[in-house]
Length: 155
Image (cartoon, rainbow, N blue to C red; front, side):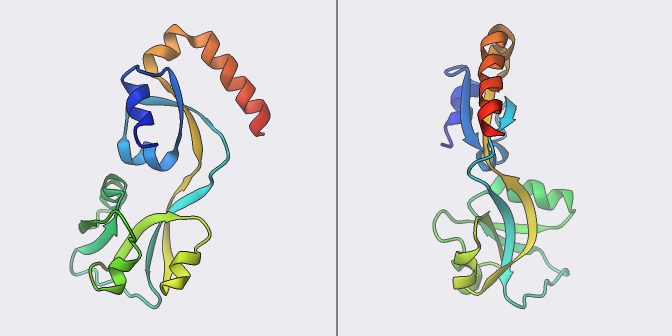
């Protein structure tokens, strides 16, 4: 799935379906046409239950979504140290590798199993229809027709 924005941005595909999480992380030059309304979850910051942040030092964030974390905390003007993990991100705080995690949360059951709680919501995520910017101009009628058909069945 992480390659879809690349294929679309580079013109190998005119359109694609990809999660908003991938769009936020990859920051590809594509046009987001439609929220398809499935695959709903969210990016969230989670910490051990009872966690109190020490604002006198950089926050240590474990995540596989490095760009999302950088962008989120830049907007908050909060200094951070990112630990990139690709597997069980929720283990970061449990082994004192990080203060918090930034990860995708659907039900929150994995967080609860690891004595973590959501402390901040970052962004809503769902599947999105995307288009190549040039294709959107060159194949506008075809793409808009498909978009309307998808809108009709996703509402």
